[in-house]
Image (tube, rainbow, N blue to C red; front, side, top):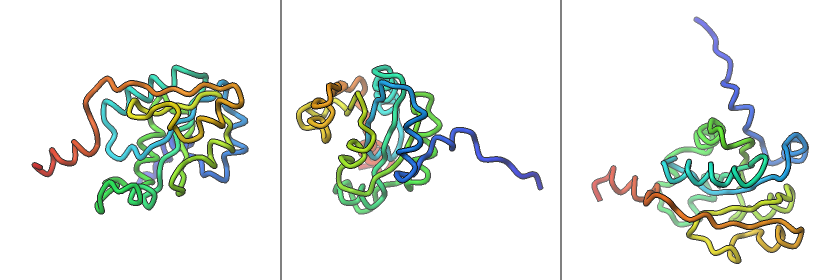
Length: 163
């Protein structure tokens, strides 16, 4: 039986403990965004490409499975496990590094990474984006990128279930 090496994109997966070392290898300005990204869809990948265009490199932090459940998205969410979501996210060209967080917000990661650019989707007002005050106080930028496509994981799950 032939053994296969892990795909190169999996090298972009980084534990929170490894972040201090790994971020030193990334170009600046550094973009940071976060989310569940449970079932990746066109809205997600468009948003991520737009976010990445705002800097020289981008880190995406994913909610752990427990963190997703605490968000109240449903008892059966996430559909995809953290390890699967990390691998899919790491495979995207727009993503330079992907990590995770178990807290209710990514504030501790934002304080650790100190990105120059903080980005969330258009359903967030910039002043309500977690970490915005931290980034702005250091002279950084905060962006809320408008949605271009009417897609969501919740809608996809409802369609699959015939709801």
